[in-house]
Length: 105
Image (tube, rainbow, N blue to C red; front, side, top):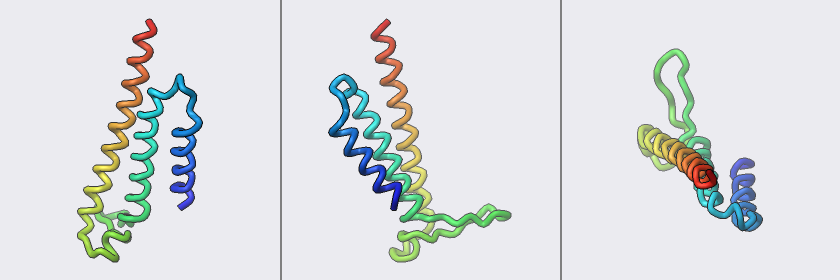
């Protein structure tokens, strides 16, 4: 819960308090922050996996499995999708950074 509140504060500050010169990068950083928040929401509330250490298995203890009665692999698919979104966001941020640096040269 605390991380979600802090993420909302960070998103608000990015939208309102970013200087005009940093606006092009703000879009990519917003995408990164939102994707990290979605991953945290999925992994910490919706899916909540419990690892069974010696065995290659796990138990789903989140809202999707307990209340919605969805099979655990749905939560795992959503987790992989959100982690892929975080990876894509990082790649886009780095791409924007290097394109900006190459334009300066």
